[in-house]
Length: 86
Length: 227
Image (cartoon, rainbow over all chains, first blue to last red; front, top):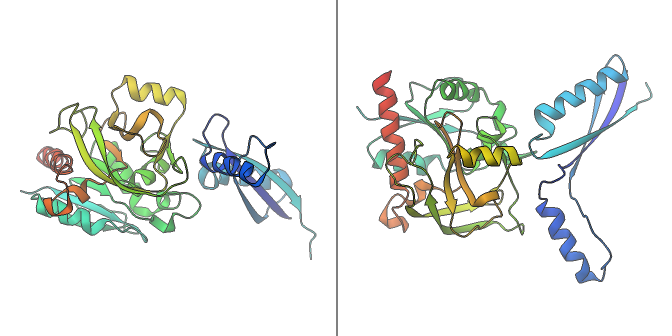
């Protein structure tokens, strides 16, 4: 089976996010005074071949822990969808 | 015999010649270690210098950590050999798990290129053995991601175990506890954001980095004597 995984990486709660803070500070200058809790993260998309969804998710999770995210400062969420076979 | 200092070279490293020059200038023998080679060529100490290893893609140091040479560096560190990561090298060593915490973007998202005052916090590390706690060193910094972060438990442990090696007098980047350098639990692995090699000759504007590099050469020679 073939799956598309979308990994969203954000700062762990409690870890300062300088990019989010800077963006948040710049918004009022444009007149947006009602925005708070801006967090900037990154998004990674990949296609993975695996026997089933559970196996695909387990492997993406392992790749997140070993390379895609830094568990010391980052949290990640995985969204998986099956790709139609061609 | 002069201490052999292995200098790890990744694609994108750019401070290796400065480190080599400073090591030689102070009486050591620099030895370049290509990242794809899994051996340290008999080095008595290892420096992971600054730059942009593997383009700093994904995160600083994230890809470099998987270079073959890093297994050899990890074994050398586990055996007690002195390992120092400078700037990008510090980032590589945290990603490799040889040092705790992580380095993220500076507060204010400013690239910093200036000379700052750092206080030596302990002489129990391979780069500060010849310095005294309280000594203030003027050292260049040159980074976008030097903002040291770690969880509360790690922070307490670093403090209680006297593992903060250098602190900024005026925090330039938002680092937790003004940390500019830390060492590992066994104390033989050190990460520094400031560049001692760029303060190793009067012509460069400061010689305050010399004591750090001399300390490293001294600890390397001790290791060589044991081996």
